Image (cartoon, rainbow, N blue to C red; front, top):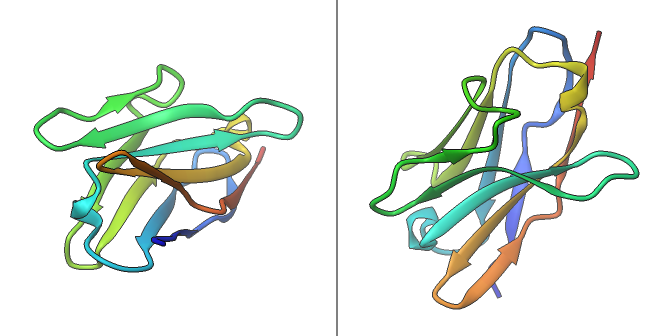
Length: 116
């Protein structure tokens, strides 16, 4: 069973940046047809942020387009979410999700807190 593990969360100031990573416990990160980032704030539903898929341009939610960038880092075999111009409203637990064939995998999440 493949596991996804997020890292890179922490505390940032408004206007600052954080880089999140998502690693697979086995195999290549490129073996996932589609990979996505989500976040969930306290008391709210988990929401989609960004998607990267083979042969397609990345897709972003309106709330993060122009500030966040999703990519795959071949050297480190990770999925990356570069987050710039952070806002207090970006505070949440961030999750990565990956699809391999018909199987779906979630990471356990990493906390991001943005102070004003």
